[in-house]
Image 1 (cartoon, one colour):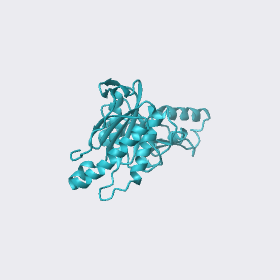
Image 2: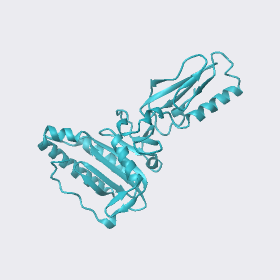
Image 3: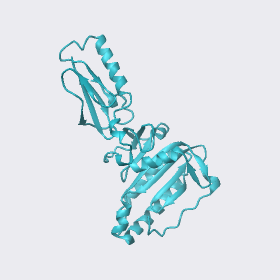
Image 4: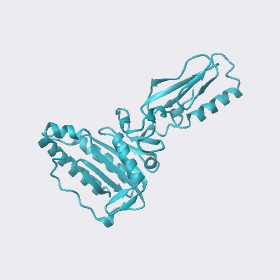
Length: 283
């Protein structure tokens, strides 16, 4: 952002990570509005923010390779160190005394994989997807990909699959911690995100449920009901009620049936990655 007088961070080109890298991207939420409201106090808060981010990334073994106003891009060789740095930054920001300046809320995204290094920068799908994750977050929120989630030890909350803008395949996204945030910012995602939001594999799992019920001849019994729930990526659940009537779930989220209730959205709780059955629970 314009108005910041903070010096750009320096880095040693030879020290930049190579191979499998975990990227941490950060950005201040609503920074343009803060600058327009009062450039002087905004500059004070951004200076505090910048010093805090640089210090924690550096002490955590990370390397800042991109910086523009209140937006940072950092690379880590170790995924655990990257997420712990992100958590430390958020915790310190929450405790910061901003004095006369506005309190800053920072959104973050982390992704892991191989990237092409060119000079003091990185290119490729991994940093691109990291940027998409960061853009989907809310201030104070840390979003990570499943590639990061698989190799770290931290409390996570599964937000489901999202088809992010310019990313062909849906990404399974997790949130670090269990704080309550608004739904993922779908304005940065493909229009197909909501339509394709049911948990991947739901159709297969429902088919297995129906097959088991057919074997037990339970579908012929009146009053036999199976509830299948799929948590969508925006925090809602889609519920399907199977009774004595035949029903089927199509890929676009509709239920075909000859009688009975249909498929509709309902408010549901979100689940962490350890609750596999909760993401498509059968009771």
